[in-house]
Each structure stands twice: as structure tokens, then as C-alpha cells.
Length: 296
Image (cartoon, rainbow, N blue to C red):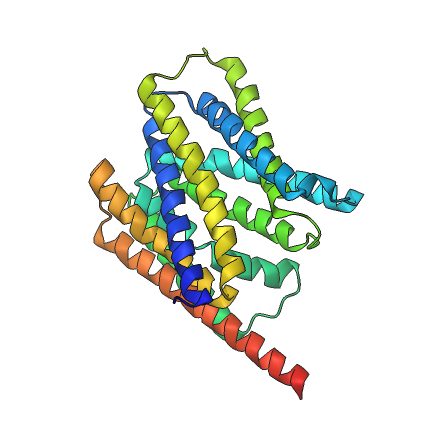
């Protein structure tokens, strides 16, 4: 019998595979459909699935305060902006490079929580964050000809998602996660609909329709499995397995897009992952010491 932590780790790895598949399908769709139309088609499917799921789970029966509603809407706006920057980078950047840059999120969220939420972060974690940022610089290489506007979009996406996650930390536990995800999906769909006003609408080809179904199912499956992962195993044990997403991106990038990162990019990705894992470890040690002080 597998332990809860082992099941949680497997679910997290499967969830990361699902998100990578969704990104891969979106990258392929970018070769055939305009981005805004892709967002609308996918958004309609994802919103329908999440809406039914939220209704079955009773998420609509929760009474929210005005403060909670504002946080949900503000988070959805940040999420919508992050989708635009992420897709712009995804369409023009190797998927493994982009995924590696996005792995810096635990570091930026930790730094943001210290700066804006007053959370305690020791010098060891701050040093790890600095090393992780050096890893990001190795990937984008701003002074070696490797930096372009799409690398900038990836960095902006990290900043925007960090702000989104900091807003999430300010939400009360009474807010259902499904409701938050549904509002995000609806906002992204509306954003795509507005963007479509300047495009010639075209129906997806059979191949594009299959890719749209694939990315919709994959993104919902990824969300479901990652939520199940953190509810099944201990957060400190399960969360580091998010970095498996980089391995999936390397595999997909090589076999599907014939992409493989160069040595400096691999080194940068390794630094980001290593410092992220160290940050999780230090957070776990800090939490253990805090519990020990409470028990004394």
C-alpha cells in the first residue's frame, strides 16, 4: 500500500505532466488559430467543466464578503494578464526554457511574502533566492544575445503570477478553490472574446478541435490532480514534486518540437530547481521549529 505522501507525490507528478501537455497543445494551436480565438474555445470548455464541478461541490452556496469578492476579481485580472504574457512567450520560446523560468515562482513568492506580507525569511533562504535569480539570468542571458522581448514576457509573467499568488494568500479559507478557478476561466474567456473583435473568426479544423479538446481536458486534469495532491500528502513533501514539470517539458520539447536547451540553460534550470528545493526544505525546518516552540 502506498502512503498518503507517495500518492500525493504521484498525483503532483501526473498533474505537472497534464499542465505540460496543455502547454504543448497550446503551442501547436498557435500555428493554426489566432491566440484570442484559442482562448475563447478553450475557455468555454474549461468554464463549462469547472462550472459543473463547482455546482456539484456546492461552491456557489458559499456566502462571500465584499472583500473576498474583490480579491477573487483582482486575482482573476492578474491571472488573465499572466495568460497573455505566458502564451506570447510560449509561442516563441522553447517550452523547456519557459518552464525553467517559471520554476522561479516559489522563490519570487517567498521573496514577495517577505516584502509585502511580513513573513519571516532568514538569510539562508534569501541567499538561495539570489542564487535562483542567477539561474534565471543564465537562461535569458540579457548581455549574451539570448535576451529578446519574449524572454521579457516570460519574466513579466513570473512577476504577475507572483502577485496573483500573494493575493491568493490573503484570501480566507472559506473561499472555495473551484470558485476561484471558475472565475479565472471566465475572465480569460471574456478577455479572448474582446481580443477576437479585431480578428477574422475561423472555425477550428478537425486537428485544431482535437488539440482544443486535449488542452482543455489536460488543464482541468492538471488542476484536479494538483489539488488532490496537496490534500492527500503533506504540503512540504508534495510541493517540491512540481519541479518534475521541467523534466516533462524537456521530454515534450525534444520529441514534439525538436528542442533541447543549451548547457547554460541547463545550468540555470538546475540552479533554480536546487534553490527552490532548498527553500522548501528551509520552510519545513522553520515550521518544525515553530511547532516545537508551541508545544513547550
